[in-house]
Image 1 (cartoon, rainbow, N blue to C red):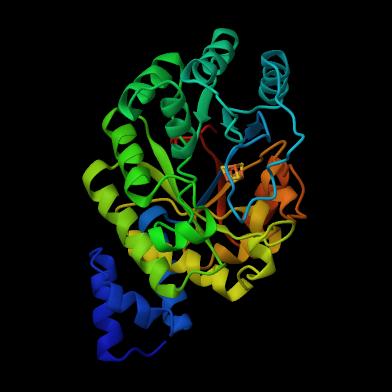
Image 2 (cartoon, helix red, strand yellow):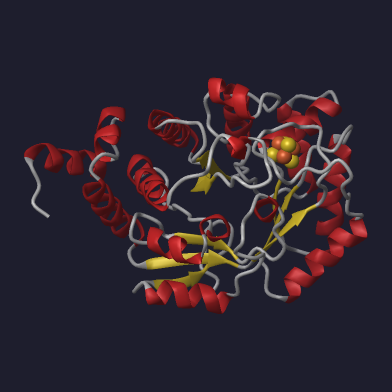
Length: 353
Ligand code: SF4
């Protein structure tokens, strides 16, 4: 591709991790350059290796006091898993090779910090497995119900066996948007505070964005720059995961249809470029995008396809049709068919084979 001077300059800035908001907004209008730079930076960051993890999602309850307009998971008459049921799921997952158990659920009315800690302790007392658990919103909920601050809550969770946290509940880190789509969720400042506190305490987290609803391109860029700013200070993010809005069975879906495939490719490419070189791993969620589009993202900056996710209910409730499980063989097939090298990884990106 022939480049003008302005574009060549932009490539240089991208390699130095100095892409600005103006650059980013310019780039999304020039998709071939956007995808080309994202692919080049992916190659510089990780080469041809594409990772995935054998993991399991435990959604321990779908009861929730929240009222997010994009949610299709919460139910009025829902379930709460018993500790024995949770343990059974963990045992089955480990028997199938899982190295990570991801635990998230609705905001159960009155659930105290003890409730969350006991869950971690109970699993850890039976299995030596990585527990990737509780979003910043859940940590806030637990702390609030127990009248402790988030730092003390995180300390107690860590002591109980918390190894890392999902950086979910980020949605769009802009309070005007949050007021419209999740009015009772923690604010942008609270999300940042909980994440940065976790990082300072040695609890790594992922970072996410939920895109493709009422937000604008500027919100994407601001969100990514905010994540880049946190990572420069804490180095606590393991990866960035764009999550496409699923429009079925929720209120927000009546006014927003979800992103197009091209929107999704742009989102992943922009993530790679704006977060480079501070965040090494950009993950595509096959559960949300579908296998085919997830494969396409490998040419737009992505180097990780997430997990096998045995049992995932949140995306399915909102219209996801990709199923709850993708086998390691399918991961390997998708990755090799894209001309890349598959590697299985741990939560913290050590290769396991
Ligand atoms: S997204 Fe989470 S916090 Fe919001 S209503 Fe659904 S389960 Fe509750």
